[in-house]
Length: 147
Image (cartoon, rainbow, N blue to C red):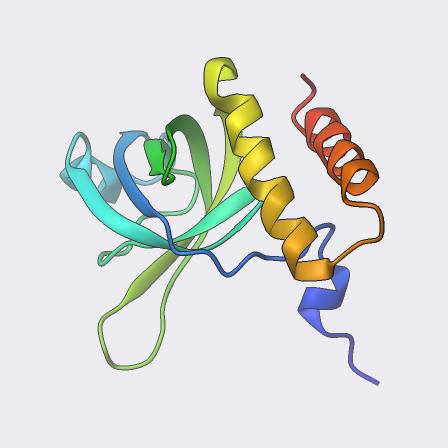
């Protein structure tokens, strides 16, 4: 039986659409990134995990590109730095998506980020004992981000 890619994921995706602004900071391995350096993109996420985010980009962003982004959650804006690990177009619509691995999240907003994701995880999986589950997941995120 073929293994499903989602089954190999360390953390499940949260199908969460959040506005995101980002700009290319650097790409040492692909000169095509120079054409879009410092261009500010305004798009949305497709999904989020504690390790990264899938962004609808509207344009192909080369792999290994480092981006500076702001995730616009309802209660806060979370600044972060990420690296594009994959970039694809899907279908004939010209829609591009980029998988971005978090490299750094602003410490000031980290607790709000983990709090928001924890609440989504809790509501999605309805773990027993909300307080214990919330504490466990927040501790897990802190280990993931080594904070």
